[in-house]
Length: 434
Image (cartoon, rainbow, N blue to C red; front, side, top):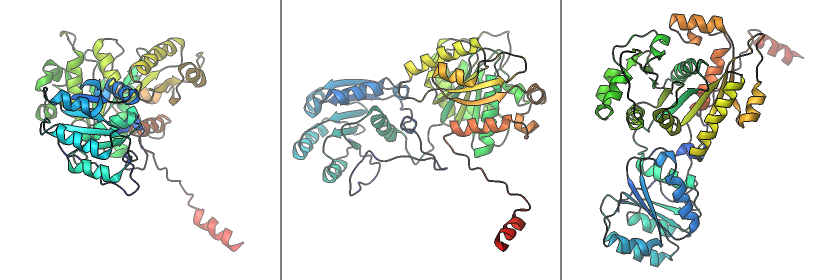
């Protein structure tokens, strides 16, 4: 058993009250505190149906999609008997309601069969600091007090395999249009650029529309290499090759551009796409995945595995139907995640009948993250110039919407400084004279 302690035990011991916060002070939701786990084997030995159900639900979550999880009933006794004849996995989750002395005795016996690199998480009923310290001395990785939720378990396991002293795994932000031509790529590029500028953080845009992608055009770049070269041999992609394939657009923004040629066939596998995105997210805090409006196994995989999903739609019936289908699928496959974000684009176009934002929200049961008005002049000219909207016209309405979207996806709160009138000091003096 390997010792990995996430913190010293407090006097009023509660190992499940630890919460992580963003630098800005905004608290992450429970589902966002858990990061993806590597390819490991996990075996759980449970005593109660509640813990077994929590482990089962965690095993079905996208963050554990690479792990191999098995669940057995029987607790510590079953684990001791099992590992006398079988090798131990990377991680053992052990539920035990034994007394302190009995549990320590069982663990001492289990340690005789455990490989040195095996981590052990104990789930018990005693909220006892003395027991906690005894377990830490014996190399137990973590102790949780029952009952435990799926979120508690995922956060615990994530903490074991994501070293807080190293750079965290980057967040994947997936952008998809409810229909073709709704401006999902424009939203993706502007939000990614705003995020890089507002937070001074590195971000990579991965253009997955290999035949018709617009990332190069929108940033006035014409790269020779890009994401297609990585997808050809995804297992060869490493940090060195990634740096060579990325195109730098600004201090903090790089693009993984699409080749945009039609004389090549693109055979994209879900596993290859996921491997490429995983390599990118290991090197930058944010990856914005610009998904084309096409439905294939690889688009479904990237969409359902993303940390945040942004659906762009224009206010008409076809977009409403398609957005509902996407949201229903995502809710079914991502039960432990927050719902996708909805952005209504090209809204309030003159003389066009539209479905209102409230009607969209009622039909989809989601709140609209942003409504961006139809503005052909600013958007069209910015696209022709290879600029972002804020670069072309910072005084237009859209930049603030992009900033709101970016801060929401990054789980940050923007601190707005109230602008004071030049006459403010004089007016303050008049108030004091009264």
